[in-house]
Image (cartoon, rainbow, N blue to C red; front, side):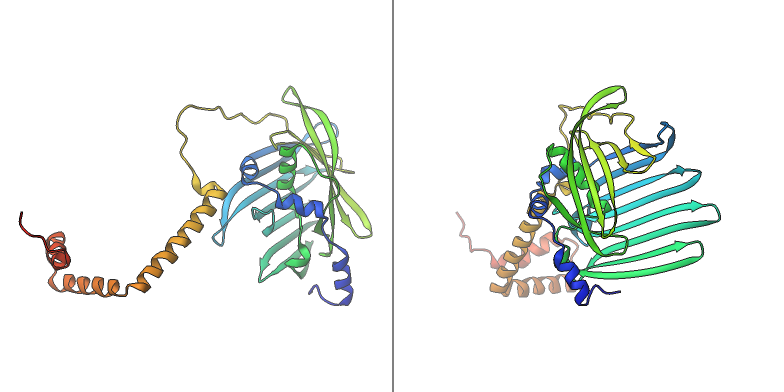
Length: 338
């Protein structure tokens, strides 16, 4: 199914991310992304505080097609109303918070049949290609759609929204009118909005901490919107997460261990610093271009080295250094005895 046709184009033209959302995405600094690189785990609880499963999120620096990016992996699993269920999200996200590729997998094991849904998004030739496979019992349904990246400016997915939450928590403020582009269950474009819920006292591991509340609303056309309410600590860690109308809540029950500062020298992991990687790549390309230009201006260099290697391979001397000295001696400036 291609996203084309007059009706579809009208639908697309009406939906745009707000200026505030685009500005937020473009304002992210490398230092802020660095602070988002951590793993966390929450407990899935029922209304009676019974453990039902786990929810975990991990973000790390990575590369995709030689492009520096972030790799996010989130997973929830448990048993709700006697039915095993789970969700897995793996996303490659650029430093501008643009989704490069994402895999989403959701399953529920019901009595008599299972429900399994997989969704794959990937940027390809200026298009975002989305494909889904839904299996209910023995029946399998496949769908696919593609959109130009120009109409998905400001796209937020399940994966990138989790990273977005961390960034909002680090800034401890949320601009108004944060409306992004998203995709609904029918693979049509819709809106996802973020709204601040204010500050709240949260009990985590026996301590009372203050967290900022963020509500994410995924609009689904004429259907009822899906709403998630999250509270996050000022270091970006998720303290609680729940979907409005759901009987379960994900809670942080133990504070993550704090990294103790040491006076010892810390090795520089420059490969994980997006700014340093970018500067290194730019300098590398600059040097390659400069060297190539010099060789073009002096073709005698290639001829000289070629003759030396040919002579070296023909004579096969035991002392290569002595041979090289004697070979290049005629090219040295003439010296007169003192």
